[in-house]
Image (cartoon, rainbow, N blue to C red; front, side, top):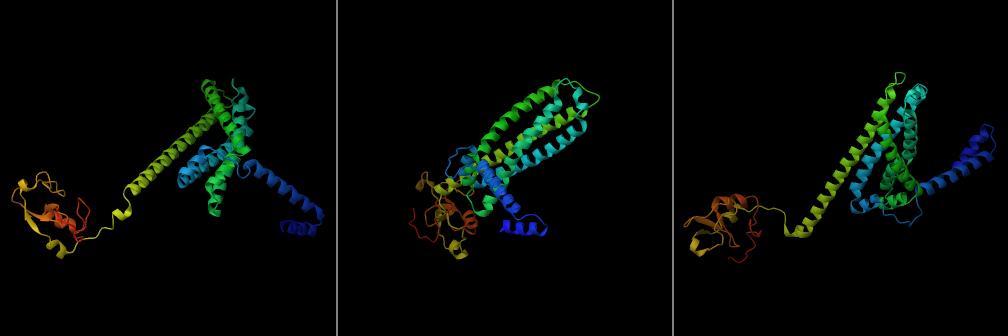
Length: 311
């Protein structure tokens, strides 16, 4: 349909009808080549750390990629534009340094430009996969098993080495009156690298905390299912008033219910206490306040209307 529309449009302006067909074929071949470059064949395995991470925590990994990838893409594009503009305006003037600083900036721009498409594909592709209902694990597996990802890894290691070399050149470079701006530009570039590392570290810490919280929540839910802790229901005034009162005698309760678990105070001999149907004893005021919020015993979590056997 797109090819037919293009053919009609070009015929109207006097171009031959065969040309749009050639253009559409070229576009299809280009799109197929890009897809094969950025994505591996279906079923290709990958044990990249991102794939392992998305298996453990899909939502957290998506947030990590969205924040780190978006920041890296914007900073990379901004760095390429600023450095390219600076070199175009001051290339000849920056040749006075004893170190090849301008060539360092030029190669840095090239490396950043080569890594930029992969960052865009990672962020935009993951977002489109999420909106279309495709599995994030399947998308990342296909992407990280591709040739583009492997080349990106080589470029990343080369970029790290180049940055270390640039930092050494920047520290040992002498001043040049004709181009005083390139050391400042290199300092800004190295600062953005440190800032990107800080963003990755912060996002990694947040992802680790999110996973730890999820593990604790799963462990808590497995150890204490929700049915063991029903919704909190208060006791009626009639139920509270109907609870029997007993005189506390320490000799009759050796080591059992010798203190109120609500206020943590010890019982005195002859003190009047409230006894719940489960057999546990509490101060009258303490248990009345408690039962007005929750009709279950603070110790055994039995409701006062369960009619359990007394201790």
